[in-house]
Length: 480
Ligand SMILES: Cc1cc2nc3c(=O)[nH]c(=O)nc-3n(C[C@H](O)[C@H](O)[C@H](O)COP(=O)(O)OP(=O)(O)OC[C@H]3O[C@@H](n4cnc5c(N)ncnc54)[C@H](O)[C@@H]3O)c2cc1C
View (cartoon, rainbow, N blue to C red):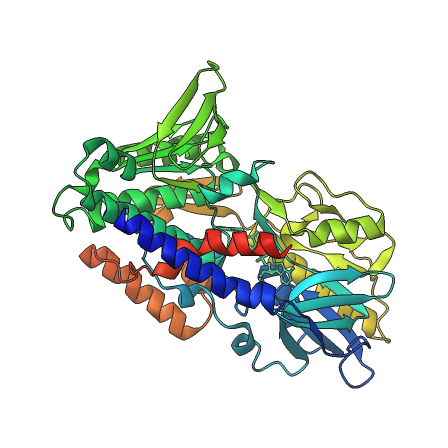
């Protein structure tokens, strides 16, 4: 009762603060009525989204005769492939999220704008971005839309309250707080059934993110936290990994999928395949076994969703104006050179584009960004005779996913390997992608500490992380 009351009071307080910023101050300060463009007559490129696609477009244009405005609603560039390590306390948030401004410090032809793009007008060639109560409209000569994707619940958005996904730093920190809080609450109860519910973790979606998170939660329970609670051993934790598909890690093929599944099962994970989730609520997840039609309900306090993605709604906004299709996941059909419809100065890249069935992978976004930059540079170079419409050709560099400690699966074309060599390959590759020497060293130290000592240096949780997400959603709903 006391805990509930305290939570309620904190909620009321937080809602008040949020309302204050979202609702009471709900005015918009428009900086000017005339769309903004940088001084001078150079070609102005607006890039929406500073993720893998957008950032690489900008960097590739470093020496081009253009002015660039990069707009992102976050002030950092997020290295999503290592988010699960933030969610499970292995590394800190800053190590995978360097400040975009600092990353672009040495590039003179770019302005960074921390703002949420709320409108794109293809006819007027303008983009509008807002930051709290500030708003500004930018005019562009070329536009690159690289706003990525968010979690999709396939029409069941109400699942999100109980089973958050992991796409942003906020998501990862909230998940960490849910996971650690569950262990903490299990220490407080004397009721064995309630303890079992608190120590049950259910992950929906057995793609790379689901598998990596599952493996790390198993390691937290079996190793890192195994002897730190006085009333129970965390190896009593039950971990379920559910997927509607008949195998784990479908893009990696059957052999690697089976290996990954066996490795997780050795760690005590219950893998349930052909399991189509039909309901998620505060206490449980219900799924239908697609082979037997049997309905199964699993009680568990911590649920995590990693089952699907939907492209940013900016995709549909652009598709509608350009008269092209957006598929069920909101991905926009683009031309071979990633332009949209008849607008040969508007490009959609990365997770938002639909082209030749390319998957939503970092390399697709990176190579797409570099390709578009080359096309724009060619366009503004008056002496160039190169073909502006050069189609995008993706070079597949392979995929890898960590399953558990010392164990990863790797697929490089027809070459497949797993286990310890896979794990070493994963570490080496991902370390090279971490941006900045300082972050790279910090990651390396954290990994080494975890290998040598069992401990993780980033298991702290804050009250804000624990309760704020749903309240922010509520306040945003009220605002709309
Ligand atoms: C947990 C996780 C693990 C992953 N692991 C791997 C992996 O191991 N290997 C791999 O290849 N791929 C992986 N991926 C996929 C990969 O991260 C994406 O394919 C890639 O990030 C897509 O790049 P993008 O530029 O299209 O979008 P993103 O990198 O997502 O960037 C989009 C940017 O747009 C910004 N934005 C969004 N909406 C707006 C708006 N309205 N206004 C302004 N800015 C906006 C966002 O803040 C973000 O910075 C993973 C993804 C996740 C979530």
